[in-house]
Image (tube, rainbow, N blue to C red):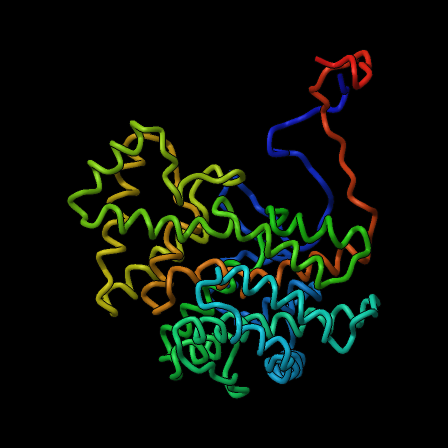
Length: 376
């Protein structure tokens, strides 16, 4: 019926322009504002990357100090948001708790009702600062423990691990978690970022756009994929069982989580970095079996199919070694991706046109109307 060209899942369809992030799928490169993510992962803090995504340039030391000081001052939650997180049932899905907390935080934001760029940047700063507090507070409550107030002397990565575990992290685990945040900060027009931009394009508020993104991230085909990888490891159980388990899964046409990507045609560069951390942390924390099973899975899959690991394949084992519960992996994704979501929302507001694509109609072209009493 329609002359509009359609591709399932909008694969390879260009839906807009952006200066924030570029993925070279053939070469396996991820670029933030012109900087290769591998360089950023090795040499920057997450706070520097947030600034880069929003402002277009890496900060000077003076700019970073001011930016970091402001972020740290914004970590405490409004009392109604804190009360919500400690009062919902402990059986609540952590992503549901986060989605609801972010939506409620929008009501109590001092800039609620102001959609200017300056106000939205302040809202973005509050969300970058407070989403870690939300996630850690709910998890402490879910475990039957008292939430821990944020420490303004710690970096964002250090502070999250501190609020989660109740003690300051050692240098290497904090470095690993900071790197994971950098690697997950943005990824072009993925499902959650596109959802955020669609909502922002209606000139709805920033909190509504972020709430839309969280809803999209919750799905197992997006943010929940690394949880599914850990479920797979639990089902396999031992390194010696990998070949049999994979053969059975492939025979049943099951999707092997953590492999393949819509954009990358080679190994996801983030997976390359996280593989190293999976091994190092595994050796240090006694969780090396997870890494060994992952490597056995990778070798088995690649002996049968030209598939490469994506970021989800190794990130779960890294988080497990950091003592982060499996149910928290997707909220931790949001702790990082809020940087990219807000960068894209701010960019959408600056160059806005409502996003309204067409659909290819596949229903009947004409049907004669039948009055109600004549229908059989």
